[in-house]
Image 1 (tube, rainbow, N blue to C red):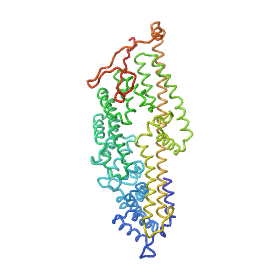
Image 2: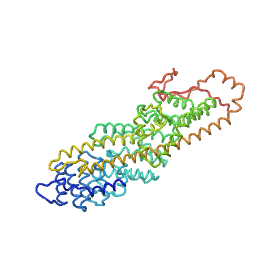
Image 3: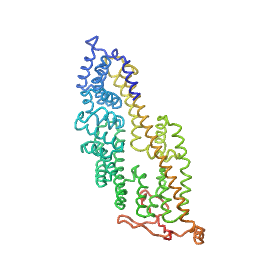
Image 4: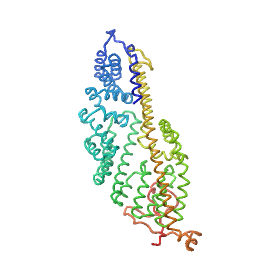
Length: 525
């Protein structure tokens, strides 16, 4: 918000009046500029229309609401959405209803390109239901739905999200949010239906009009990611309902090519654990030993491994996992804590370290970066980083469009182009702040989860020591531990769509996630 105020001060001082020359008038008024902007816009000379509207705002401050609206519309249609976002927001803040309604006709397109978080709070504060046409009202309802869900009010969120049209490009996102809200309220069957719709309709987000080929590919990845996340939401809801067999089949339908799959594999292992199929749970978890999944850094994987061995009373194995856990996660926990505390007031540092993690190899040797793989490689953060490149392209496009205008004085740091440069620098700053906040909050969340996992590991250790003392000291156990221990071959029930093969020590892509251990329980009860 402070950056917006700085830009507002800059615009007051900008001397655009002398950069535009009318052929027939020596002293045109602000209304003259505004009328010319309208005519140019209708003639599809969008950038030139925005320029004249800017001149109107300089000539007569009372015209700023209408002028900002014309600038926003002109820049959106010129393919400059990031530059347009400032004028879009300023129009909303003006409180001038006709101007506000005119820019809201492009709300959905703008949100899908620059991101919901850039404009969401302004839509909630400065617009109302009746300001929108049928298409763009969907974004307003989505904004309210997400805001109320984040505020902990799933009932109201469901009400808002239910008003979104099924034909909207954001309908799949709305179904993901509504499914989440319903699951929180234990409306499980309804939640499952929403997640099913989301997964089936995820590709609809590709209907948005985007010319940039890189952005189109990013949107395609986002559609695939959304589909996988909604399938995962479906499976989690079944798990919540104790429908473990159904949940297992739904988890299996997540594509192994999806970046979501490695992070849900341990959820499926928990599903097997809930069925007391500890050998299947361990088989799911051993998949993380595959070289293909070495980038995964999830402390809960080892917690569940230790817990599964504990459930089988295989205390030596459980103790080995506990030692591995302490060796693997102690240092990264300290590193995260140190980084967060050292940069607590510098969100830019969090954004930069997130970008560094994203740009490094996914198989990096840095455990800190591996931890961040879990969130910086998702569509939200990647979209922010990609938007930086699009902003750079917009800067180049503004220079080109400026050079094409005749009858004016050109200067990259002056007048309208100069102001747009300030706007785009504000956009870069806002991306860094939003991205930095996202990385910081994610690190805090994962650090808290890591601390919780250390507590769970400590509890498992105590439980193991309490249950195993007599068994570990027995002569038979000593003899077994002194030689190669024989394993049993007890398997969980095999589904009708599963086959049984003996593991030969090699991980194959089509086998990942399908392993089952054959350990006999050492429990005496």
